[in-house]
Image (tube, rainbow, N blue to C red; front, side):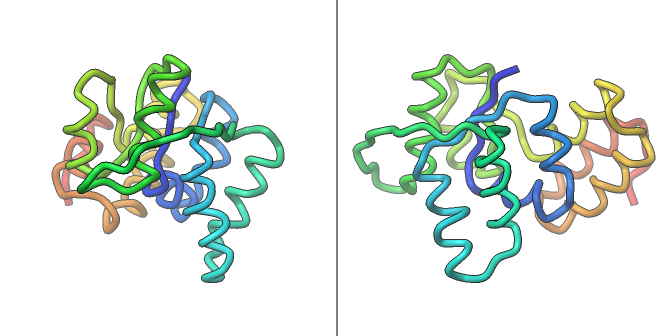
Length: 159
């Protein structure tokens, strides 16, 4: 499965500790604008997740693409580039938690950060217990609806 990710999802998956596992099994792509936001700007602000993302790119687990874009009111450079990259490489899905952005990419399959956890569980790459733990870790970073849907998908009870 070929997925294009935006900055928001990359950072969240890194913070909860599942990015490295996810990129081992899913073909992940980002535009250079997302790399700049997450790594270059992240390192300037001393964000720990920037190092992990940079290492994943260095190990070729996340592929970075040069994308030329035109700015669009209401959207950041990373979001616009993510959409264009998905079209360019014929990605299976775009992964983002930004509701406004996701509405603008209606021609594409979209996934939330919680779906990364569910995909690993469905693929038997993590246990149900681990999946629930990751969902609980990501809960403060996602919408109530995304959290509740993830717990329901795991067959669990909402806390």
